[in-house]
Image (tube, rainbow over all chains, first blue to last red; front, side, top):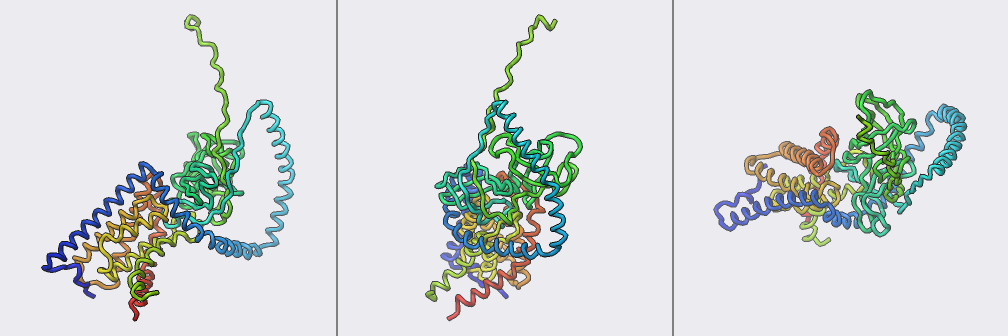
Length: 298
Length: 160
């Protein structure tokens, strides 16, 4: 099929001018987009406010359908649970029996820990929960991993606050509208969370991969110390995230570190707790010892 | 709906609804939703070249930016460039059929997705090219569907 000839204006001067004007407008729009991009990189708050209004207006649409999607998802899981029910039951019973003494041990340890902390007069400020909100939609077509929460500035949310579910860390707030807010999930490639291995407290950094996993890299150089099924929790280093929130479990180990799967599985997110920003406890720096006497050194 | 209004607004609304697909209540852990807004825009543009002015991609891009989570301005820029490029192709290739349209749309989608990734990288995000490959394939394979929907809507909006 041949295209219509409207874009070839022929000898009409008027038509040619208006076509030229449209080209100029198109190029101007492209340049405008570039400027908008530059402005948003330099000062993200301005456009964030506009975007907040957009999410405020559209979140009810997502919230309505979320229940259905979750119901369908969990129905599939329910059916799946019937397969191998017998062997699963046996395995779970064995696991319960094995973990009961450990639970008692852990309780004793927790008490011990509390006592020791009191002795040290170390006061930890536990972050308060600011609000509870539902997670309704996400940036599914973008390479950013954002989710939308149904709570905003009116409930006291501010950007930077950590967000967690009952299972683990979800991420932190990057933009707030009046009624909704945007969370950068820990699987976003720009997200960095300081973590430690649960068993021995080895420090590491969890960076999002963008494909649903997190890269876990040890801070110490040398051989890769991680093994499969290592559990990582937030370490609280640098503030923001309260220590001890489950982050991810190592599902693959490579030469440099491990790839973890987050405990807060995006498919099953429903409710999220928004906490105040964790402030690392003030610890006085060790008192400086007596200055070495230059006469002594000689 | 008023017949005149229907003929006038159907293409615009279908593109806006396509952009709004990202409001679907799914919490994705990887980019996998095709850019439906862009696909509808391309389908209309390739089917009815004279319907929109060349600059029309920019306002649609702005709407998409509000919802998609991409750095603001990225779709305005990329979609405008796509429209300019298609305009250039139109001036070269006068005789066209379905396959050429699909190839043009595939190139445009690939440009938009990789461009989006690059702009995310420049604005402080991260991620590699392998991240968008599945999304890219799905989008290109789904483009004929968008073209079909646009054609069906076109018949409906112009029906007497």
